[in-house]
Image (tube, rainbow, N blue to C red; front, side, top):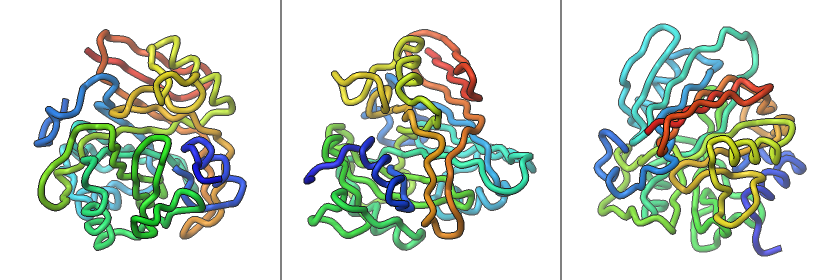
Length: 274
């Protein structure tokens, strides 16, 4: 099999126990190049580790700007997205999330070099390797994109993705200023297709890629809600087994009308704001 879709990668990775599951802006000089429709303006996520640890990683290692912080909450600027972490009162494992950030489509190699100096990256798996790139670059052929993946201190699976169908090239090397916006957030569920159809009907978000049926990725290249299986387990993570589970997630999207939905049976709140 010479190509593997992003959704197939999720399922195949789970079956093999592979560690890596995948898989409007203020302050970003490239913001005007990124269309605002369906962009993720804000993510509010629970975290199992301290605010100090998250700030050391996201502000210290990744260079994001801290906008506000308290003992239990921190807000950071990630290009066109505000990324907010709230310390979970739950003891022990989790909560766990997957999210991705767009970078300029011509910057995967500079981003790789930059990240390798700061982070331990997850190598490509199976058919997702690209012989033209180092082993840490994952090639999503059907999305015409290249990515690098890594874990944060809370074992969230974080991704930088260069989507080659977007016109957002930039000159020079890579820095934290090249993080354009959060472009993906995973929503684990027992029935991904049912959730995808709900998002299509209620928001409404189109299926991605365009022309496909609602089943996995909903939105566009600047903002995708990924409908995931909640019981997938990733036993080969650096320290312990990873199981996504279901955790409180708040999402704010840019759209054409103001609307809020609470996903029935799940702690997912999605706000669309003009």
